[in-house]
Length: 448
Ligand SMILES: Cc1ncc(COP(=O)(O)O)c(C=O)c1O
Image (cartoon, rainbow, N blue to C red):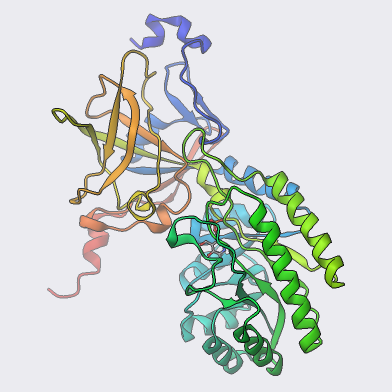
């Protein structure tokens, strides 16, 4: 007998715990049995069918986010940053919704091409692109390559046997004060050429001398998890200024300005996220003002959101392995995943929430630390999470907002295979990526 059978009033939602729409896919609900469903499928059923840990991905949510970007930025090119999460199906959804794709390796490029993405709508990134990968990209006809070093210009000029469009990555010297690992707008770092400096000049000069390289525009990416729109306005002003200086010096008018990604999402209830309508306004206004000031024709704007497209579509399922109350200390809920499927906590100090999915969390609560199963004291998935006080091993927890930089950053640390990705839509599941097995890990052993 379920709780709802005992207390039918729960059905009305009177006591239904709130699933914050800022961090869960839009199509998330409690079903009649008090279980959480996403895309019409009970998460507990997915855990039973596919095992745990498992990444669940709501196709409707990904498509909805793509549509929102297209609606808010009707004149811009939206280039999905595949590093956030790239599988063949994701690439298909994204391109189907009219987005272009940003890849940063031959591996990501292969996935994009396997999804029949138009190579002309693929942008290749990376501060260190190996010769062979540049060759592959050029041979398959990628639309644009973002140049990140003088060496790359040499390699590209040797490789390009037909006109290849390129952008130059510029650091606009904007500090968004995020985690040091994602502050990519400041001058002293590995990406790009500092704005207004000699290096940009030299890069432009060398590119325009190459008959097979076509300089289309400039690119910048100022950081990640940015919820304030102001830095984007500032980036537009500085980048248009740089484009105007290039025009004055080299007599060429660049037509593309790629502003990168970095739009924040909420990981926990109450976190600030990027407001796309406000972002669109500030980009428009700054573009108008900067272009008027420099007498520069409006370039085509491109945006490269990654996280903001897929983060909220993802939910990770874990099974509880143990619940341990440390005397005068914390309560540790150990689950069957950890830093191998979510390294963001250890890498960036990211913070998450979690809920039990197989029943209504009614009754007394406890505050717990969710620990991973890896042999590292730092393998903690979430702090200060409110969970039912009677939580038992075997129950299933869901961690929302885990669609971006989870599967793509996952490892098989401690010999634990990477989780599958199960897509949900309209009450159906589809396995996009299968679980990595011990056999998969053993396959790479060559020695015995
Ligand atoms: C060049 C570039 N574009 C886009 C992105 C996507 O960023 P986000 O997922 O924060 O939107 C990144 C992330 O590192 C990046 O380096």
